Length: 399
Image 1 (cartoon, rainbow, N blue to C red):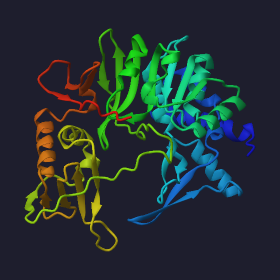
Image 2: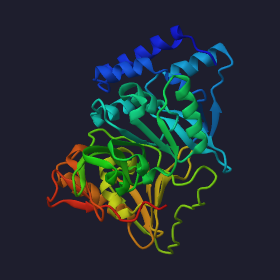
Image 3: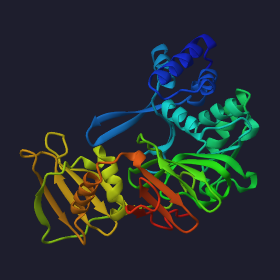
Image 4: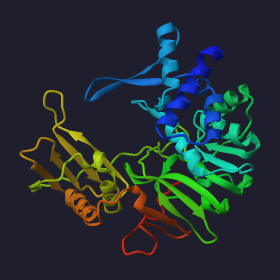
């Protein structure tokens, strides 16, 4: 669809202004990039979820064939919101295949990279190509390299970029391996989450270079971390503000090995007790959930169970060994009912993580850091080598 400059350019400037006011955009050079790159060109298809009830949602593509639909599409394209741009329909229930991240998150990450003229940047997760366009506008497309596991998405991004005069190097490949044939890089930025930081990324970054990625040791457990490359390691701190991306995948859509979430073990005599810890903790106290994740493990299911008048009645967590817990959402003067079974007591692990967090002074994300070596990855509080450290499980990056 043809969109005239008078339609999108004022919207792009307004988006940049909103990001400045929100504190997500400070650099004049990145502001110029936001104003110059037409985001709508990278999101010709946008999907939204229409909620039928608490357990049934359906996807709907925005209809740009009407003036009202066209305006909604442009409004969304130049808003500070993440957009669903492609669905994986290879399974019975469609799932997310590609998104365009919140522009404010993109600009915050781009500024955190602290690029200099002449820097070579590897982006892991091409997606729509919009982030690669911003990088190309700032650095020149000969300095920008981007990989994505989806060949079709890479070709779409390449076409969109070319129409705007940008020709960065785009490759369809497993992003966990980086792009060794084009290394070294001065900056590596991953617009996807990983359970461990691939050492290939570190090895392909020059000494003094920067790696920025979303570390998720478990479901929702983690956030952005900015690492500096040293001769023997990469090390740095987590970003003060929580962020989340789709997980890095090692196979294109339709080729991912079928995986079933863990199932809870039958327990003829589950433990029943009470707790004062809010069952919404996994969603509302993300640092606590991060600390608990080191013991809970990576593979789990997390959600709601039961129904009363169309509303869930309990939080449910099941871990890989079949341990499970359900905590009622309704409380009696701050007291919640807990039922749990299996080899471990899951909610006690979360209660212990909450007590530790309080005992440490309720630290935010920016008090945590990460050290990555070829053999170990260690999360630490305040500074490396201090008493409070946690080991990221090795060999998590299954290929």
